[in-house]
Image (cartoon, rainbow, N blue to C red; front, side):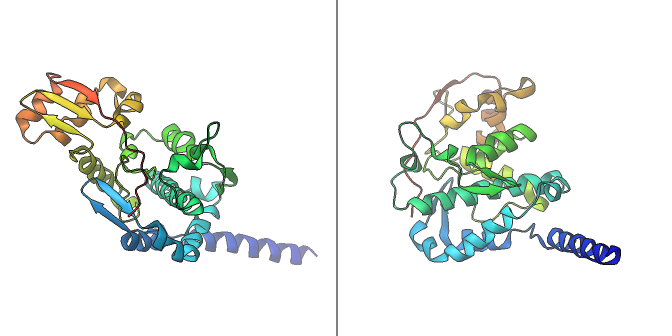
Length: 257
């Protein structure tokens, strides 16, 4: 009996090691789907949700691979692996949510007067039933001091920062976050700087999460200056706060292609 118990324990431990070793930190299936069904026009992305409905098996397989990750396994990863995982999970489950209710004109239509699509529990992650706000606010904002995540997590709206046409991966995470941030801030449909006015018009995202962008004495001007200024002089003027700032209306229409 003791020998049998030891054999069962060994098999369970081996299975756990196999699961850990085989998790795809490149998120290859997600990248394949994004490259095929997401197009980006500068800082705006469009998703072919209707065509994605034919790929449900593939998408669900990827999302299930995320759901199978245990908290212990997740905690053993590097910080960049954990953050990439959570960003991809947020984006993947957001796409799944829209597909479950397609066609809709806006992700906000999935909620109601007294409910929110971001509070809808419809998936498993790290051992618990979750909603999208759990990932963004309960995990990412809580555990990572990284304001650029607001340009990576995508809320399925036209006003959102772009849904990148590739998965976020630990090896290139800083580069990917910075690229998405710059692309969004330099998209004049959502963010604009006029040196002649001078005037700075920013997406409401910058207002909603202002506290995250202004930690450690940094201002919104500091955060956007080098990313929006077309010249060093522009960047210097923005940093010196010699520009008026206002926030633009947010477009909640679905980012549907």
